[in-house]
Image (cartoon, rainbow, N blue to C red; front, side, top):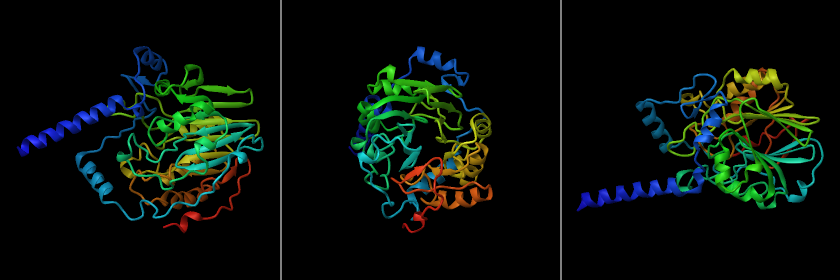
Length: 371
């Protein structure tokens, strides 16, 4: 009888998991044969998967895997702050109709509101509470509220997505943004998720690496390589592309790195599009075991120099615990590394407006007093 109960529980769990993966909208859409044929024309797609520009191994041997699982389960006291992080709440009237110098507002992690030349954009708008397909599968966001909630946002001219991982592309956030966003700018292949979620093809533009586009004749956008991977389910690793964004307006130029391990692509981006007034550079959720796909802070500083950033901001931290380092380790390490290279580092509070052209470097060291 005991064996029967154990087997029954295992079967129920397996069937429930299978149905969840198959039926939950969180996992997005499926790629047709015509989609795959289109991806193959990109020059970066082989055997039904997108490829990095250089060899990027992500495999971990059994010993390291077991050690990593233990480290995640055991936890360290400083991996997450014990209190919410400082944040400035904003109202819609502070954002709606803005037509001043280019500026940013950080939501934590890699999510931003970016306003330039009278346009309002969102970068990787992950506004959910858990970076996972179900609340049981991840830890909560450090702050329970956002600087401004989606319902209070004015019309959004465009949403930029770097890749389809859950901490960058959130189904619930996109569904709430559907009726107030004009257009979605996506890596090649990510459009299948948006079409599955009810976005018309006419509102989606997919980009291959080095593709460019024009918004309202004033703003140039381009999609550039990173060294990473993609996937939302158990069997779709690298089924969609990943990358970074260049946004160049009349008076300012921004680089948004997405997620990436260090590599020669940063110098190529700097040579083609640099210098940048401001660079948002991945600096968080790293570990030596997966340094090929997430930079260590010292590499982030070097990558900022490679893209020819006049100033940089470390991103991919400050909202979720997805790795083993202290929650504020990224900023504590990247600042001295960038100083050696002569690159000012900007670290605003969430909700604080940051000018792109002339950001103040006299920021408050707010992360030092949080426990």
